[in-house]
Length: 110
Length: 111
Image (tube, rainbow over all chains, first blue to last red; front, side, top):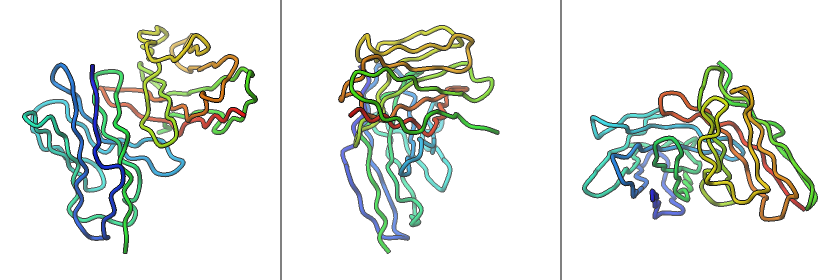
């Protein structure tokens, strides 16, 4: 069965600081991996995806993620966060139906 | 272009009432998914259509939940005899080339 673990429930970072959100997955084959962002009262917006090929993928809003098969991880990074990045972030795995993690809430402080 | 739309955005139902939630996918998207998101949790898969065919309904929590997509476009998720545990946000997504695009969701509160 496929599963996703996001170990950090809540992360607080200062504006302008770097960010890394952790994601570990379990999947029987080569995984399709995704990061979504959800702002309050909004639907999920796709930040980036990994299907195959280059293990470092670039997304929207300056985010990137690195697929590491040996660690079963797909961590999300951003070199310098902005106040508008405050939101809930979800990692997901799947081909067709997606399995999501429980999310990491990101708070930005001035 | 227009994204995925869902209606109503908010629904309050008394326990035991039936509800119907609508999803309008992005035009031309063949695949359509329903997810349930409880408070403080990630979305959980309910069911999936390819055109009008329901290919996977393994996530539907009980036989009170029913989904349809009769013409391969608009989909309706119906919940009969609602219970308090059905309170959640119901998300619809349509898919192209493996990427799922989500609607804003319908927040269902059962009182």
